[in-house]
Length: 391
View (cartoon, one colour):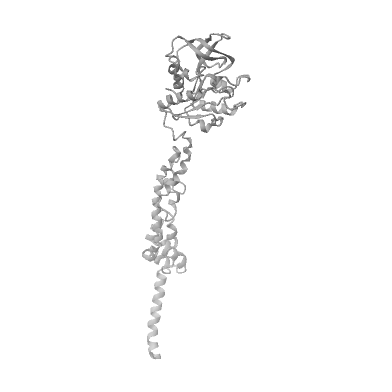
């Protein structure tokens, strides 16, 4: 190109350059920051959608800051609305998917084994916790939010997920603990447990058996409708153990609506302690060392479901202990007069209440044949267990 030609084209080049500068100023600095705040909004629930429509987060926003040098370019930034460059904040579209975090409401499933806990309320917001990570940018699948329902750990209040409701419709689990620790060996106890277990299972109750005093804790007793103290002689909570903690747990269990059932020497306990300790107050009495084996003349007193099928008077051949202490609130149902020995006329069976908890005790039942006896078996001893359970 000759010098003359260059002179001819210079005005044209200058005009093109000026036009380019004017276009750049009008576009607020061009696509500058297409993902600016638009991309950031994607961390919310659909915030990126706004960035896509107005582009102010991208072209507008960046134009406002990057193109701030060109004041009027801010208005011209409207062109940024069409700024397809702003649409490149499509990463923010994942943010819209985070709205699926609402699925976190399914966190209610987190009640799981907990039973009553996880409300999943927070999950309705798709927030971390119940909504879990579903609230995070792009993570809006929300399906994982269900796991966050583990907030239902409050369901620990459920007494025992493994036991069905009681047949009588009450709130306690349909499970009974048959407890047999004793410092006196009574050979027929295993046979007695078999009979009680069969009766309870026939009533649709599950049965646990134990000789371990460690079962007497609040958490463990909450699993049961009733505790049966089956011939638990002398020191029911371990040799030479005063049983204070265990008795207090048993008292709280009764006051929460549990039941207590005791047979024969379940009241021949803590005989050297005066006044009688809490355990004897709970079971309603205490026998001393006076006892008799042989014919005893018995009679029923008053009117109660556990003696309704008994004859007014009857003879019992077996071993009975003399109840030297009967709690003031115990209601004596059966008394028997020893046919020999001291000739004591003693309370043999009684009931009492500890708050809403029912207590039944009988000195019958040292041997398994008492449980199958035509007079006192089903009609009195087993009936006492049924009454404790609210049957």
